[in-house]
Amino acid sequence: MDVSICNVENGKSIISCGYKGPIELKDIAGDWQKVIAHEKFNDIDTHLLFDCREAEFAFSLDECHGIESFFAQFSDVLIDKRIAIIAVSTLNTAFAIYIEYKLKFGFGFDIKVFSTKEAAIEWIENY
Image (cartoon, rainbow, N blue to C red; front, side, top):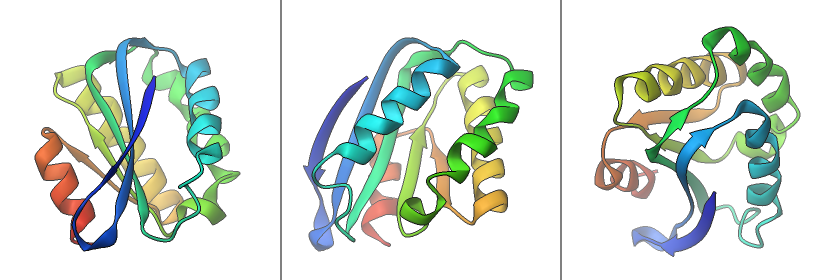
């Protein structure tokens, strides 16, 4: 996972995480630790973008059930962040929508799935 920061309109920043190749469920935990450790993460106007256009989720929906318990430990630090996921393939979009549903309705996260980077950034800018 490549992590970068970009500044957008309205003084907001985005921690952008780009994935390439297979995404294993076990890798997500380590990736989230990197994101949370980022120096800009705690800024109130910093939000998150996960770009999965060049990646493929390499796990099944049955394996996703642990996602809720994993993200429960971050609920206090993610509740004020917008989280955008970009997915284009049918499988990735299905997984991303499942994750969106679980985190939005399970924890109240402001998370949304997009098919383009431009739409995701615009959504974050309008927070």
